[in-house]
Length: 410
Image (tube, rainbow, N blue to C red; front, side):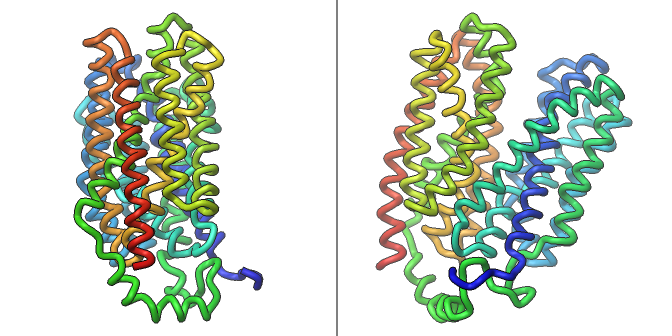
């Protein structure tokens, strides 16, 4: 685009980064640190308290389609801000918690509050950016990793200095500032609402796009099997992310110290950050299918290195970085993939459905992976399964590329 852009797209992106950082970077990423102190203080069993995560994931999966529709069919800023209150208020309320049922209720509320975050953010960005949208989505999604890396040590120090109850209140306040306020004051779901154009689109381009909208919608009719294929391509590798919680345990099972396990988690976060940015950039340059295929291969390589070369420390570190890039498959790929396959008119519903299924699969895999280790005494079955899932995903992405080209050019 030659003329200088003067619209609000970059301001919208900054607001989306705040919401992403507050939701996933602060409240979700630091949940484990907070709960470790809760366990010590209240004497709950770890398994009993972990049901909070299961309830949250199931609620998120159940409500995502409903809340996404509410955001896009009503005043988006008010709706999103109200939903965010269901997420941040329970954190502040933890100051008064003493019983497990209270944490379970908080998990249900949090699942409702964050249910549409992973659909609303990329959809809004796709509305505001018609060029460089892959990079913009990748950069926005990386905000959670940056916030998590910065706030995790702060959260630990706050717990030591003030206790977990006061820290929970502080987390709720930070969530209010980073999520509720940007959502209410800056969330605008479409530039047309305020008479602006998206970044990368001139007025002439926009008129041409409107005139071709009916034809485009007709071109985007695809077999029902295509949606099932997208689940194989995205949800399969994405389910492996649950292994990130087990990296410290994995390190100890193969003879390393707990410090090494913590290092593996940190290296995975480096891969998380760099992967989202890299995948978005590659998607802009080479297309979402080639980028997704490459990252699926990277995830498969990480599984193989974990399986066969975990005793070689440098390769173990490399595997952790590569494994962290898997986050990009579940967070950056979906909106770009569904937009290319189904077009602007239909991809919102498809993306919402995918996120619902992804939430259910994530809840199941998060529960199953520890039991695989308990039953087998090793995480190698998980890595073998990961290789199979990535192989299936890679072949499926190549097949989806044909449908993408057909739908755009038929």
